[in-house]
Image 1: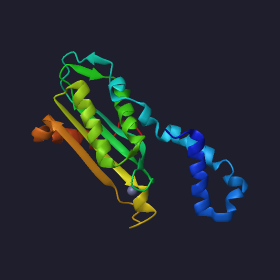
Image 2 (image 1 turned 45 degrees about the vertical axis):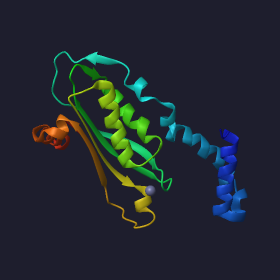
Image 3 (image 1 turned 30 degrees about the vertical axis):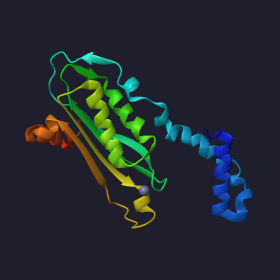
Length: 192
Ligand code: ZN
């Protein structure tokens, strides 16, 4: 187990590697503690458990249509380059017996985004969690994100968007369900 002060020392070493002799200047003095502190938020997902987020469900009372929370913005960190990647997730399911509070769909996105990640894994894990805890007729997760490691290094593409999707159950089996979902995702927002 690495302590907080050991993590701060490691950041100091990295700063020295980047900055060389300039490490003593005012702006960098508290950078190690600021960085480690910011990680408590950025990597908060490691302290959360899907079963707890999706613990309390409600009777669907016969509702058997699509439940969609779209445009859930998220921030994550690419595990390959430690660069941020940000985007939007659309999360949908069709309940059989149980529905979940809508904010929990946003929380489960954050739980997976706030870790060292790749976009494919976030997409799959959200779908897995909904399947496990809600046992719905179908689950769909679509994520669109732009990646810092593509924008500021390597191929340097500013506007490329990566899209990933996980379709389960009726969204995988039935064209009609997928088509309705895509129409709902693309439909004009009520007011913006
Ligand atoms: Zn990367």
